[in-house]
Length: 340
Image (cartoon, rainbow, N blue to C red; front, side):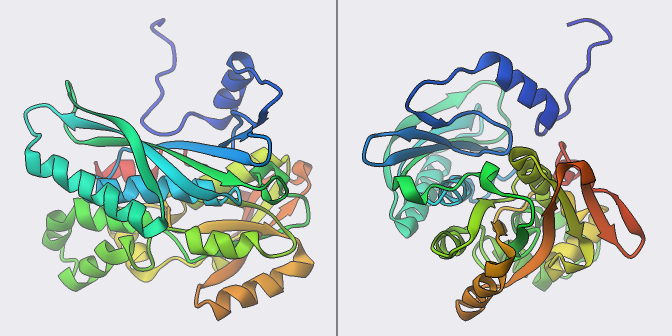
């Protein structure tokens, strides 16, 4: 490393740098249907009569309920491909001088209960107390299956699609903030009852998008799904447009920001568009089928809103609000990092 070489901050690598990196250092084969690409969250491998869909994701922000997060965050990416999550492995790395039998059992119990809730079987992994950690880390690997004709990829989104946001933002971010900074927020005057509601976002409305993704996968005209995680809604929209080779117009006033999440972001000076947002789902759907999908969600009691349109790439990725139209910000460093 030279003295003037760039140092990347904590968070995602810039999309352009990552894309160039993957282009240089990855290869394909005849059975790899979807490999490493920016905006695609799973690998898809042809197993003959079906596709195997594989996902890996770490949990690095949360410490409370880390096992629950690990299962649901990985399952969210599997189901956005149209697949069913089936088998899971986890690498559990534990902090030196802080690991007790009860801590380890709590994490394993969380993994077990979350897998049971989704019909996933824990099939292996690795656990160790690791030097240099100040908190537990869980890295999940989840495997699912999908019939050949049911596979969805982010790159399948197309110009003219409406983008629906299912549930709202920032579900995961609000839960993490309330759980990890509870005492500090109480001292700042945030009502304990509000913090308790935000803590419960983990379960209600919940960080899982499995039910919502299954509904979309069965609906005609759905071309792609993507779940906003690190970097929040804004970054997920950039990823969708990047993968599909399109532009995008986001209509800011249509974005459903949940009340407790909005208040916590305001109190901490965070932009809700850039806060980690598992629990929300983006669906790219043909405009003539969008109303029918929204009706299906309403019938299931799941909120959704038409927040964006995919446009020709030359129009750019834009934020439209009362102040006008400008480039949509991208949060390679998640806003939540400012509170850690």
